[in-house]
Amino acid sequence: MFNKWLFKHIDNSALIVFRIIFGLLCFLESIGAIFTGWVKRTLIEPSFTFTFIGFEWLQPLPNNGMYYYYIIMGVLALFIMLGYKYRLSILGFTIMWSATYFMQKSAYNNHYYLLMLISSIMVFLPAHKYASLDVKINPKIKSMSMPQWCKWVIILQLFIVYTYATVAKLYPDWLNTTFIELLLKSKSDYFLVGNVLQQKWVHSILTYGGILFDGLIVPLLLYKPTRKYAFIVSIFFHLFNSFVLQIGIFPYLALAFTLFFFPPKTIQNIFLKKKPFYNDEELIIPNYKTPLVILFVVYFIFQIGLPLRHYFIQDDVFWTEEGHRLSWRMMLRTKSGYATYTVTNKQTGKSHTVNLNNYLTEKQKRGATTKPDIIWQFAQHLKNQFNNKGEAVSVYVNCKVSINGKPYKTLIDPKIDLASVKWNTFKHSSWILPSNKE
Image (tube, rainbow, N blue to C red; front, side, top):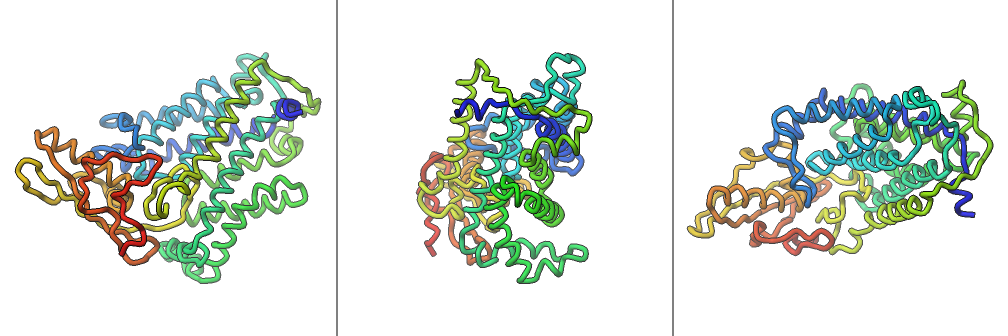
């Protein structure tokens, strides 16, 4: 029964259209990163980058190399859209995008993570079997159908994302509209809507509307009587986010996902009218069924389990940031802080304060004064810099942080030499002081 459900073939119109839109959005993301200056600010100007811990070997290409890197990604994205050498193109894009994702986290964004995951899934999907250059080159691969699992892996991934995003919002500063109010203060100069965004009733609508949308959108899109209304709400929700929050391609990618919720016939009638509609519901079980099922079972266990890890780590994740990334904790808090890094020569005992401007960009400084993992990484970087000069040093950090406008509190134990401690990936680091410590 399970095999019949997974490998029953359905019309592939939604997947074909999604491939075209996905490729276009990836192209705009890649090329847009160059023209908006993101590549320059994030990957070229910094003397080094804060990678994901364990990926220190991933560093930007020298000089203008990252411009060419992103141009290549843009070309691969166009190939995905056109369906040219699809498997190689999507695999190449996935590897390159993943590399840039793990290469830096000063400009961390959950949507970059989602793009990496969807790209990885797309490697396994037969998205090039219609309306593609691959079909023109080799008509034998042309197909009007796809296994049903192709649709459900996307829906399940979305359900996980939205569910964890909902749960993460169930904390006091979200529920009492504190965070939304702080977020929208910076939008007061927006044309026409700036003043409206400062109203308390708007904050309440966005606060509780955000919870309801994230928690209910997938079930409402799956349920036929509510699908059309949920889609209309999605359009307003994501366009609002695009205009007000300016979060790149994500709102449009989120709208593209809705293709998989509508009947294939509807998608075919709107987007691919010349395409013959497939309705045979053949059951085709491939030879690689078992490894494919195992692969996705392991993948989704990982996707469900990874966002839960902060519940097993001591203290508040908003304070420690331990278990924050890769957990769909999206736009939940504002943090501000200041830090003093003191380097002490172990031989002479002489100390001096580090001028952060000599090492970090403005965006990097925000991380190096508020986020414990980045603070630890910068301490390690300072140690290596002085070691290269023949000096053995200790690095001490006096750091105070405010979350959502609350009073500043000391984040890092100033008596601990961060140059000599190891990073704990799955447990609490004791040099991060308790969140309730005054």
